[in-house]
Length: 247
Image (cartoon, rainbow, N blue to C red; front, side, top):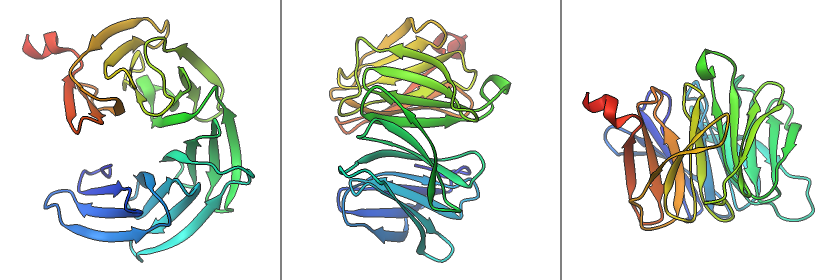
């Protein structure tokens, strides 16, 4: 994942580490050890903190200026929870997680407690916070079970939820909302990348190219392109409106 200025990159890996890199030179800047696989990392908006989560079921917040962990957030569940995604809240005082217990949880890092939660229909594979969607409010997009759902990021009210008959999020996959708010992309185990209408859930486009399950998808900030990453070891870039790009 890149920071907001695309100057730093962070990775989480199966070697039980999270690392921060210079995105321009590729030089490793910091490494943070964990006790299990790190599945998700994200920079805070001010680039001073890094949130990590994964197979341990623990959310950690690292102060990048000090190189040390400042916060650890633990689930109360008796069964082990794998966290597949961690994202920062818009206010910088909260983080949101989604994982194997089918819950999107909001944590207040000032008090180290859960502030809210959303129950969805299955294993959560992806959570995305989109700010000022279509010039309006912030939207939380969640890929879980067989659905892609959008929630108001302030009230957590369900806005839309669409079943994905052609792809599911049992073990992989994700979704991303276009900055305009009128459509979203989704992909998973069937190796294809699809574009859907946000309001109706109708499939608008289907793109083939990957030779392995799709693990992640994201629109560029301007919405002109989007990227997809797959287990086939490739990252593919797609034009949102190729006809307009060549006109």
